[in-house]
Image 1 (tube, helix red, strand yellow):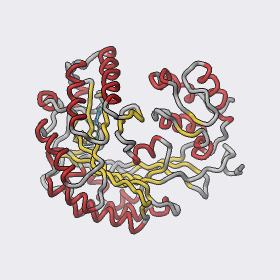
Image 2: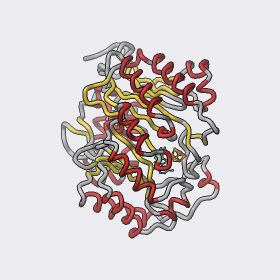
Image 3: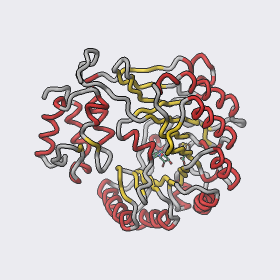
Image 4: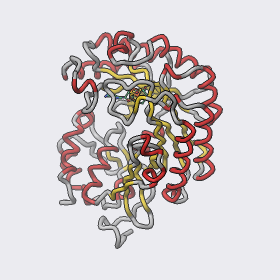
Length: 395
Ligand SMILES: C[S@@+](CC[C@H](N)C(=O)[O-])C[C@H]1O[C@@H](n2cnc3c(N)ncnc32)[C@H](O)[C@@H]1O
Ligand code: SF4
């Protein structure tokens, strides 16, 4: 259907809606981390922050446009530093003011050193139904090099107590490509993870980011060839034990994928709440795509004035194909082609020439109904995305 306000000429349809809630404090800042996380003061202003989150949710109610939340994600920082009662207050607020779909996923990120059985039980009672534990590695020497506060023993314990508290959806975050790591000890880490029987593993390659200690004093990391070998063997091992790789770094058993991340990668909508959180919203009436940004510093965020002045930018038509492809092509099975017009407001013809060429080159699968990479394309995503940087609807 054509629309006069939308130069792409297709009516944008608001996709499923999620909410991301950022908790910006950690007990200690890790030397590799460039997330908006801050070493916690002696006493975290937890009550004030929860009040601020609630005010923030109220500010953004209009963005829901009648949709219920299919996912709520407490990320960080270290959300497990907060009490179950604080988490419960925020969940209740989101449920009352916006509402949840019947199968809503509510995830909370936890660090092994900041949890115990009681805390996990409290989170469970509060309505959290998925726990994501930041383990990084089960190797004590590597944990030390990464500046982590937990040991491999407390990592294993955290998984056990999450299970006994009643969680049947547990993710663990692991990193590979660590200092002096070889294929054998990278696989050992994965073996540990597999034997813990978690439903989901996020297996990230350690990257050196600006504004981190590692950037200024980089550890000696494995070279590209070794990383590629680690990844090939790692993916094979995970597949052997029933972990389906559904995204570059995401592996799920029994199809227990992360609904929240899947929504990002399907170019769904999300409201971003909390210090430094960002959101992506399709505005139905204005036929516009918006990205929203909150102020980053926790102290600024806590001052009502700054938090209220949320910044947002419109995602203009020429940027939309690249933004869409950057997300959806990370998914191993891609997405239905019809998501492109529905979620970008642009006609399929806007990208058809590029897509045809990529199919001819064997980088995209030749199908009429699905947008997905071949296994070659999955390895060379940057090459594919580069074409959309220069797309601008020339087809
Ligand atoms: C932002 S953290 C939040 C979770 C939790 N605070 C933790 O670290 O355990 C989410 C995950 O991002 C990953 N991560 C952070 N910095 C990274 C980097 N430079 N390279 C690769 N993965 C990184 C880690 O695996 C981490 O668990
Ligand atoms: S990796 Fe996690 S624990 Fe470490 S500083 Fe970043 S958010 Fe905090």
